[in-house]
Image (cartoon, rainbow, N blue to C red; front, side, top):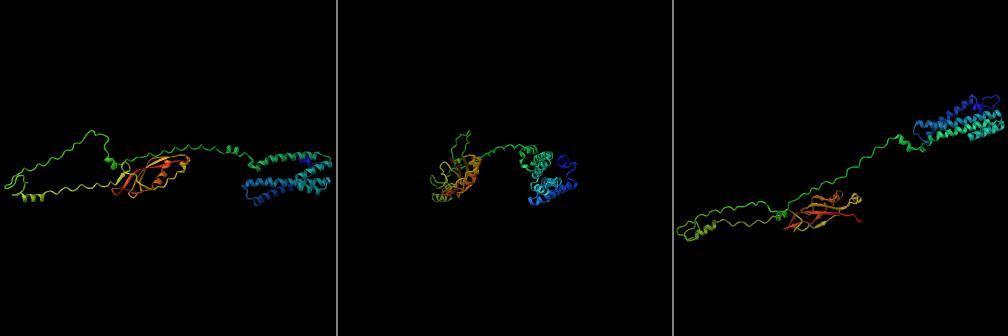
Length: 347
């Protein structure tokens, strides 16, 4: 291109740029490459990879210095050939670069009345700039590329989400029925089909009355004549009277209800409302069965009914409750009772 238009300015069609000029331009490109390759990491920080650094050195180091040397060499050779003020145009091209070079082309075409040497190179330069910008802009500003669309082609689609876990089933509440003294003393509600017959032992036959010589009528067996001494001896040898019936033992454990009063509660911390149950708007009653020991503490706490999210809070609170010992016949006894913990959300 340059040999046919730009550099063919002499009547003999001799090229303006010589071999020395091309060597200078290549050397300037190499110097620009090395300067960017070793200077950019120091000034701008280490790059992402060596390939990126080489690409940047070619774009920002080799290309600008190569074309700057091209413009300067051409202006130097051509202006000396035409006698147009070499050093003045060299300063203009050095400061304005491609803009100064375009000014020189227009000025030299007007001086020589040969507009071909200006119009065709200007068209080529504009075309090269347009193509270069179109190619280099995506390489420089990679964040402007549609990442979302590119990732759909490069990344496999994510796996489907796992199925939701099955709902938590509440453990079945096992109710233990205790037989208490009240149950034993309660009247039967069903008539049994068979009734066991209890037979009394046969009476021991008494020995026949044997008369004693000298005795009195109606005297006791073994008596002596006169009946007085025999009566005294028989009274001394007779069996002692039966002992009084034993005092009924106080039962160790009773159940609240009927004629047994409710145990008196003296310390009752309120159960905390579980945050998860509060978020889920769960409310209700947790029914517990407990044994109040002789010292008033809670023993053997069991769950009868209630929502699983409320049970733990109810157990932790009731375990710390304290009662006044229950007295039966003046002695403390254990009490089996049922406790209700109500959980209600404020409106």
